[in-house]
Image 1: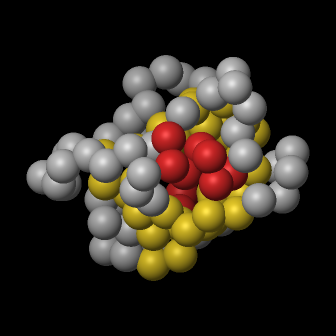
Image 2 (image 1 turned 135 degrees about the vertical axis):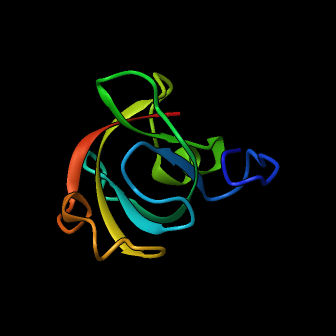
Length: 98
């Protein structure tokens, strides 16, 4: 992982291109309303249509379908310089991939 930790598929880990490593965010599945607090530990996703890559554990808790993608809302909570980033100040909506 980009932060030096070992990947655990059951963890609360996500990969984000815009949120700082070590920050926390609230991810909500827009279809079913389930929310999970996650920690940004990696960089990605590498497809333009995606805003997050989530661990299998996060995908399970969010109730993501077997297709592996879901429309989500991402609201930063806390972490390194998250309040100083203009793009992190407002919740984002987009597609997450398992």
